[in-house]
Image (cartoon, rainbow, N blue to C red):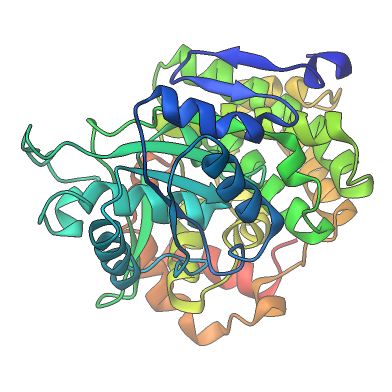
Length: 391
């Protein structure tokens, strides 16, 4: 897509209805009314509750004659107890839909609340590796609408959500095949005010999604194609979005690239996310930032022997150098350019956690699709390296 295309509204139907374009948040009231909704619950994170897009959303819903409530007790790494509180908010407010708006934590929180809002099923019955729970046809999932305000998580087209199990101190993926967002609204205006550091951190999250999804073994040309295009868009537009925050084409390119990469990781992820999930569960770190720091360590572990895939990723990024070392060097240069810290220790992660983080990471669903199997010793070495000096 060229710059003018990113500045024009676009409507897509794959894999769910997607409305893309500047200013399209203003359509939300009419769209909800057309779906027969009357009282949606807005779910967002604690840091977003007082941002302008929340009041705008309320106003657009009210203009269309809809009532609405808000639940914002969602942490940067959503917790199971917060999801339970969200379910009670949905029920006590007699809501009929959920609008998840914000970054990745808001997306995950909103989807998790949606999974449990109309039933008494335990949250962890929806865990990824368990057989899908039977849903009573008299208690269907509420209508779900997703509105990302960061370009990184790519969580807007699926029901998957990462939630921290407070009892185990671990993150788990939950979902259900019967829950799909009825609309994803991608409005680049909502990302313009994002600070440079959050633009960088969330943007690298999208890049990691694309790289890890593409490197997952197996034949899945749909996800592979989306991963490569997502990688191309993110690596083109992320440095511009960090450097020139008001550049609407860059903000739009990042939103689309993030969305594509988010669809692609239906194929799976890898050890970057496996480690990052458990670091986030224990230390409550920002997910994209954690991914960004860990990425080079895992690339150096994974990529030798994957030269053909490395070549295609390098070409997608516009690089002539297609060796493994050259590819990793380009990634590290980009991380330097957008001021990503060089180690997990710089964000407060201490060396004494390496053994338990490694053990937990190997239990993460993302570890199961990593292209190279890691022993507990190898995983601990990856964690220790990321803590001491990732690049």
